[in-house]
Length: 311
Length: 311
Image (cartoon, rainbow over all chains, first blue to last red; front, side, top):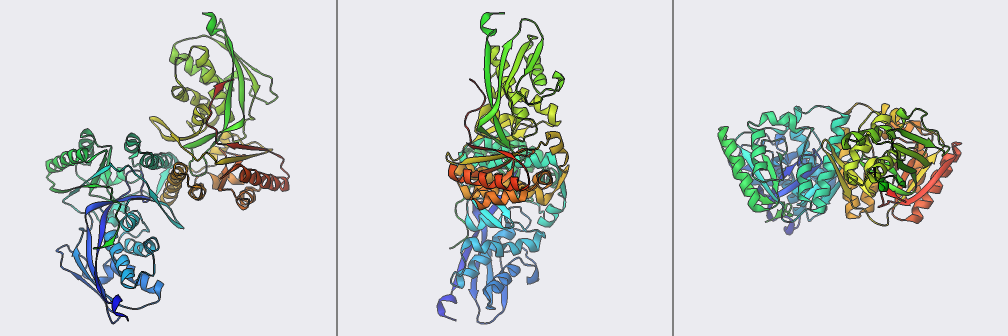
C-alpha cells in the first residue's frame, strides 16, 4: 500500500431536506450549516473500526451503523478487503428528518473512495451510499443521498435504472428548517404510509411534482408554493408532529411559499423567496412549537450547491 | 339583440395529444393539421341546433353531443338563454385518441363566447369546455381541453382548484401521430385503468412526470425520452391496440425519443428531436400497423403554439 492512500482525511456531508412536499421519495436538496463530519483513514489490515465521540447516540453494534453496509458494498465492488478507521467528529441526530443516515452514508462512501484514489466518481457512489438507507428504512431511497452527494436540488427520475437529475433553482430561494425536540425513526415514518393510493391521489401527486420542478426551473415562486402539496405521506405523518398544521399556517402567514414535513419528520421546512422571509417564517414556526411545549433548533440556509467534500 | 352579435363565425380547434406518457390526466399538447372546424351563429330565439355534414357519425340526440353541456354551462354562467346554430365543417373522428371531444367542446365554448362579445377570456373558458369531457368520459379532465384552448404544452398542476401551467418546450421537437383504423371510446379507455395503485407505481409516475417537465423546459431531449414512461394507464390500455409494443419499438429504432399511446388510444404518438426523425418514426410505425392489417393515418406536426382560433 502506497503512502498517499494511508493519509487521514476529514469529510463533511451536508444535511438534506427530502420529499419537498410533492416529491415523495424522488426529490431533495442540500442545506448549509449542519451535517456530519467524519475522519477516515485506511488501515493496514482488514478491520473496520467506528469511533463516536460526538455525544449523539449511535448503535453500539457496528452492524447496525449505516456506514457498515456502505463500506462493505464498496469493498465488494472494488474487490478489496482493506479496512478503515472512521471517527465521527459531528453527527446529525438520527430521527431528525434532515438526512442523518444519508449524511453518514455519503461521507463514508465519499471518504473511502477518496482514500483509495477516487476509483469512482460522485454519481457512481450514490448507489453504494444507498445501502445505508436500506439498512435503516428498509427501502431503497436516494432523495437524501443524491443531494447530499451532489449538492443542489435533486430529482430521482427513476430508481431502476437509477437516474438523478440536477434541477436548477432560483438563487434567492431560502430554506427554513425547524427541528423540534423529538425523534421519528425513518422506519416508523415509512410504516404509516399506505401501500396503495387512489388514482385521484396519484394524479394529484404527479401534477404537483411536475409543477414544483417547473416552478423551480422557471423561477416561478408562486408555482413552487402552490405545488408544495403532499397527498401521499404528509397526511399520515403529520399526526406524529404536535401542532404541525399550526406550524405550517404560521409559516404561510409569515410569507413562506410552502411548508411541509422534511423527510419523515419531525423536522418541518419552509421555502421562501428570500432570507428575510425565511427568518420570519422560522421565528413564527418556533413560536408555535413552543406553545406545544417543544423546544427546537432553527436552521436558515439557501439551497446549497455544495455536496459532500473534504474539509 | 344587436347586429354585431348575429354574425356567423368559423372556428378551428386543434387536435391534441394527452397523457404524454407519464402525464396521465395532467399533460397534453396541441398539434397542427387536424382538428374540428365549426360555423356558429346566434339565433333570435333560444333554440340550439347542431348540423353535421362532415360524414363523421355523431350522436343523433343533441343531448349526447359534447357541445350541448358546454353551451348550457356557459348560458347558465352568463345568465342568458340566447340560442345558437352550430354546423360542423370538419370533425376529428370520435374515439381516435387525439382529443375529438375536446376539440368540439373548445370550439363551441370559444365560438359562443366570441359571438357574445368575449365576456370571458380563454383560460376562463376551460372549465366550461370541460363539461363536454365529463359527458363522454364520466371524468373531469383538462389534458386535451387546456392545450386545445391555449395551444402549446399544458400541465394541469391541479384540478381543484384548476391550475393550468404552460410549459416551455424545445422549438425543434416534432411529433408523430399514427391513428390506426379502429376506435376506442374514452369511457372504455378509462374503464380498464385500476382505481388504486401501489406506492411504488405512484413514485415511479411522479418521477417520470417531473422528469418530463424538466426535460421540456431545459431542452434535454434524452431526459424527455427517458421520462416518457406510463406505469398507470398504458400497461392496461395497450392490449386494445394490436401490435402496440412493436409499433413503439419501431418508433424507437427509427430514433424517436419516446412513444406512447395518445389519450386513451388507439392513436400512438412519438416525440422526436426534429421533423426528419419524426417522419422516419412515423413510416416505421405505419409499417408495423400494416403488418397487423390495420390501415392508418399519419400526422406530422411540431408542438403547436396555436390554440383554438377564428379562421
